Amino acid sequence: MRIEQLQHIIEIDDKKSISEAAKTFFMSQPQLSHSVKNLEAQLGYKIFRRNKAGLIPTAQGKEVLGLAREIINNVEEMKTIGSREAELTGNLSLSLGPAVFNAFGSQIIESFYQMYPNVNLMITEDVALEVIEKVANRTCLLGVTGWPDEQDDTRKMLLDASNIAYQEVIKDYFGLIVGNQHPLAKKEVVTLADLEEMTFVDYYGFTEGFLRMFGIKPKNQSIFVYNREVLKSVIAANEGIAIFPRFFLLNDIYFDQGLLNIQGIENVMDRMKVTMYLIYSRVEPLSPLAKQLIKMIIETIRETMHRSLTYNAHRTV
Image (cartoon, rainbow, N blue to C red; front, side):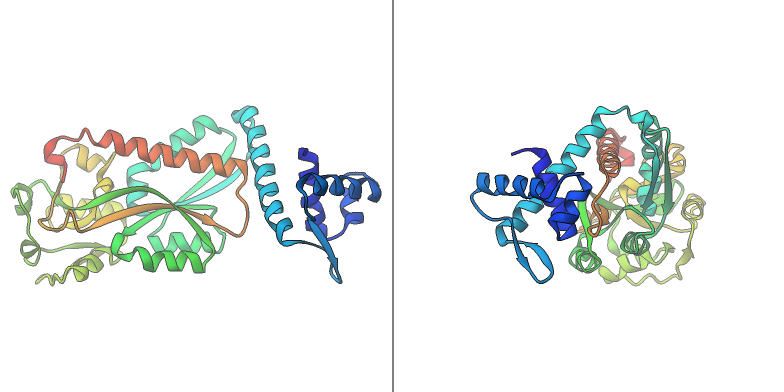
């Protein structure tokens, strides 16, 4: 069995015709037919059968073609590894959720351009449903976002219906983000009852959904914001609090300067987790360059999270 034979049957399947496929390889029809017959003889079964529409794969042929396409894609990826990364060119697009952008955006950009200086990477910051929509309509190649585990089944149903593949990157807990002079900043244990007396800063309705999930009804009207930096500045001014995954404060200047703290919430840390996913369309195969970007994103996020374990005690949940 040779790589060329796998390329032959893939082209025949695409063209539904041996004579048309033969033109691609500058071969005669008998030569290509001979190649397929040799492969079928090695395997011990037919790969194609003929009907009114032309050549179509048999049941065994469908499995063989699936494996053949995977092998050819891997061969192309090996060629990419062998080439100099700095010479690769092209355009890639990536949509990141707010907490993901805040925590990992700069490292992803830095790592990417060190490896691929001639590739144009466009990154946008979008809330979870917008990340999914962009990947679904293919205005964006890849997305990285997350949601509470309680929403996991619902969100995955949406992804499946939109032909979107998803790959888990990390899990994290939620925490309470407070300013360093806020009354809750000095509490060793924050309870759900404490939260009912507070003013929340709500980013795109994210906190409101969290509070509904736990049956919390704050007495004060929430402050709604639609900008991540505004969110942090309001909290740093001790005018409100917010609930976000802990990694929201990774690599953040407000947190690094001690203007923001993150507190645990009693009986919530073990119950409320968030999972981050990398998503992409199932409709079109990923290019070798896109696969390299996926690998780099996952490694960057996981390495950053691993380093975050060295947080000081007052910065951890």
